Structures are given as C-alpha cells and as structure tokens.
Amino acid sequence: MASGGRTFTEDARRAQIIDCTIRALATLGYRQASMAKVAQLARITPGLISYHFGSKDELIAAVVAYVVKLATDLMVPRITAQKTASEALRVYFETNLEFMRLHREPLLALVEIITHDRHSPYAKQQETALTDIEKVLAWGQHTGEFRDFPLRPMAIAIRGAVDAVPGHLLNDPDLDLRGLAVELSTVFSLATRRAP
Image (cartoon, rainbow, N blue to C red; front, side, top):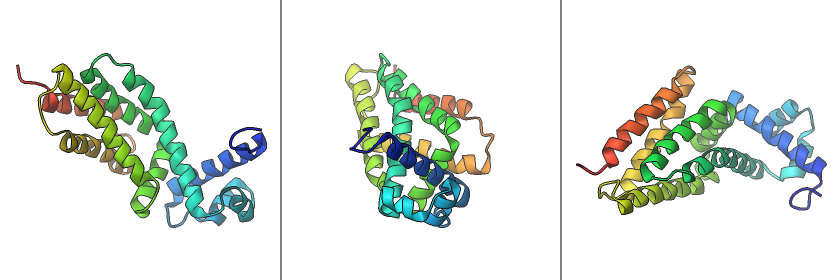
C-alpha cells in the first residue's frame, strides 16, 4: 500500500490525473478544463477520474494541495534556515519567484483556480501565507532588525507584491524574476528596517 490506503498504482494514477489537470488549467483556462478534457489529456475515461476524485471540486482541491506542497517544499526549508529575520524576508522573495520560474504550469493552474473559483480551497492558504509572513516580521521586530509597524498591513503589502507577479508573467514570459526578487527584497528591506 502507498498513502491513505491506496495502492502504488492508484497513487500513480491520481498523480497523472493531477498533472493533466494542471496542464489543462494552465493551457485551456478554468472554464474549459472540463473532466472530459482532463481525461483526454490523460488518455483515460472521465469515469476513471470520478473514481479517483469523486467530483471536480475534489480534483481542484487535490491540485491546490499539490501546488501548495510543491511551493512550501521549495520555500519553507530555505526560509527557516536563515539566522536573521532580514535574511528570511529576502529569501521569502527569492524562493517565491524561484517557484514561479521553475513551476510555470502549476503556478498558472493555481492562478486560474484563484481567479475563477472564489470558494476554492486556496482561500484558507492565503490566510496561512499572511500568518507566516507576520511571524517573520514579528521575529524582526523582536530582535530589533525591523521598526515597529502593524504586522497585518505589512504582510498584506508583501503578499500583494508577490501575488502581482503571475499576472505580469502572463504578458511577459521573459520577465526577469531573479532581478525582480532582488528589487522586491530591497523595497521591503527599506520599508521594514529600523532607522539608524
């Protein structure tokens, strides 16, 4: 058995369906990414998708969970490895934009879900993301690296800057994400640091 009482074969089939759903969302858009289109990409019947996921909502939830795990696996170990809050904030920008560079299709799929499904499972993840940023900001205030400011507005500003990037990537696939990460890091370093 693999995970959740499923066999390795069932896990492999679920992974294939998630991968094809990501491709359908990224290339066709949310409204056109039907179970039939996903089945066509996976070369399986729509009934087999229903067998593994039950409904489109369950499939979308699985896609969101997969993309979020992909991002957190890349980002969290590197952010938490930093010795100062200032460095953690810099790495936060670097790893977010690195994820966007390395995982373009999953990113676009997630953007499609967020844009077209107001009640998607990602809504809870947004709150988690803000809370995680607040922890880094509180750490920096505690150590004296950061000035005093309300945590939530600054966290929203930081998350808003990151969330603005995918829209620009759609119009400019060659956007310099490394350079942008440096600029965002610089802007928020200046915004958060304590005056000398």
